[in-house]
Length: 358
Picture 1 (cartoon, rainbow, N blue to C red):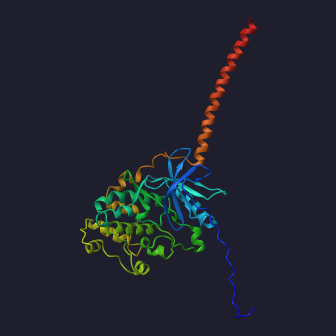
Picture 2 (cartoon, one colour):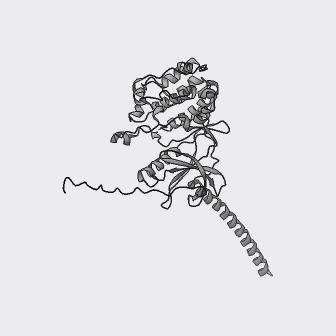
Picture 3 (cartoon, one colour):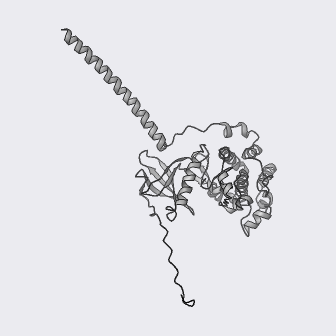
């Protein structure tokens, strides 16, 4: 080919895109009717849907149309389902099921939380901040949820106000464990894989560098979350955030509030605890979420936060549970029918005996 001749670029194969979702559409083999979109992110979209057989409402989490046919993203959705299914806690959004089919996009079936996120609620507060008095019971519930996840060897990795819901009864619901990771993942360490997904303003320096997930990452994110809720902004929110995460200490809470002429009602020990969570060195951070809860309330470990077993499931059963219930119900009916038939046979035999005697 003549070097001076411009080359025509080879056209790239079009990336398959799933059909767009619309209100009123039936999904899940006709089980769910889409009502309206609740939220959309870079990779996923969440819809409110009606469960037609049971009549209730659920939240359905789909991959974005341009990602729905990507095998890697489908595997990520499946991984999220497997990990979330391990978590049964009153302060964590419940995962009911995963729907997979060759005929339509896969999705997760989750508990619908009617309420608002802490991010949205903060915007409605005076000076866009929470008082510590109002925030304290919320944080204790949040600690309970995170403690449970860590007990199950899972770290959230994207903890922030937008992922913490408050329902209409005032209960905390921790959501969006889409990039949660398993602690001590030998496969990831063996291959040297690095994953720095998350929200930069809430991630630890170690998570930003792609180091293996640790409980200390969630502890840092909890500190950054409390900082924003109390001060109105994350610890680092402008300029070179990456550099600040690595090298610049955050401004103390009282000083940040003072810049806005807001009186600080945060007790000194709580303010120091938040700053310890935000330390660059994981060894300086509190050793566990439970330690944070005990700093907030010395009686936290003796309260139902950590020792009450999860309530029995009263939501829609999974497909496996439904199948088991059906088999049990059939078995009971079978034995009833057999008992009735046995009685009828006895009566018939006795009647025949009387006839023959005559």
